Length: 266
Image 1 (spheres, rainbow, N blue to C red):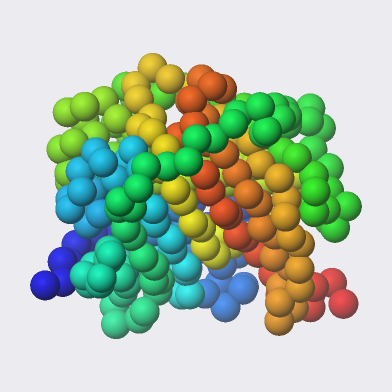
Image 2 (cartoon, rainbow, N blue to C red):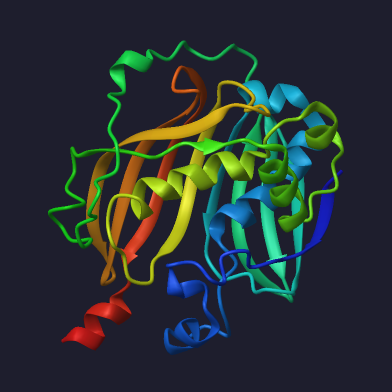
């Protein structure tokens, strides 16, 4: 039987540097208003998986999400998790529009060990270059500054994504949406971007992120391609707790230069 989870979406990036979350900018790109960030739509998708598998999902689960249409601030979003042979097919709908899909599973076998030494520590530059094909070239390594998982940070995120599961607060754990949000920093802390759009991610969890730890990400750009006029970057990332303990392996995709920008500059 399918599970459904309904949540009132909240655009917690309305005032961020990425103006695609601002109503006026988003409307110039043809959207109704500012887009709720993809990492928060991802966070909504995690709810059925954690409800089904609990902490085991945060320790070794897998989830993928792709975003097709925006979810808007203040609108209701419904996540439907439909059982399949080895997991859940995920679908997100808002006001009759199909917005995202994905898949979540809990593998039978334990995760393969991750060698942190194979992921070089790289730090964001003091002065970020403009995003272009050079600063986002395949093969480049990127890093982030640390996010301290304080009681306020954990509580604020649970409030902002309207999370109702008691697990996170009861066990002082970071929400997986907060883990994925660190991967956005691989872009925003390393280059100056115009309006950009997160379009999908795949995660394999290796451990829980806990109160008192510092989260960082290390990543390598594996692709920078043109698709229908959009410039799309792919980053293979590792999220770490206290720079030592693997939390998640991530494949992160984003449109760093929408075709509307190219058309406006032509």
